[in-house]
Amino acid sequence: MPPKITLLFAALHTVLLLALLAPISRHRHAHKIGLGDGGDKELARKIRVHANFVEHVPMALLLLALLEMNGLAPLAVWALGGTLLVARVMHAVGLSRTGGYSFGRFWGTALTWLVLLLMALAGVWLALP
Image 1 (tube, one colour):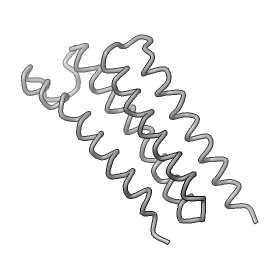
Image 2: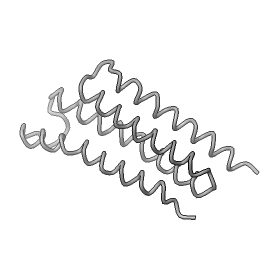
Image 3: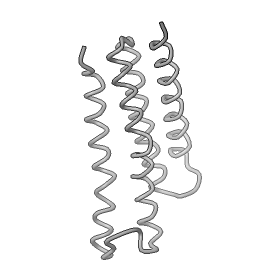
Image 4: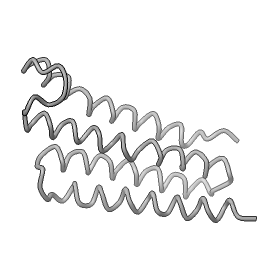
């Protein structure tokens, strides 16, 4: 069965990815910084928000698709995908506002890790004979 639920979440995460890229491009253009962060702390934080997304989301979506294709209950796929999306929005908003502690950054990270752990465990469970 094709992973249609995951396809929806991949598309939504792609929209979020583009939303994270836009401020970086605008900042680079406005401050004429072509590569790296040019020592600009605001740009460095924007780059880290994007990089953190790229570090976590691809594996999460791959796991979600594999779980869906291997028969994980659709409700579980919806719950995991929805929680991941909420977590990534929370993290992006939290880290965009401050490099230190924030509610969004903390809970976005915690929920992302929880979803990854649950999906890894479900993957092991479904893969075992």
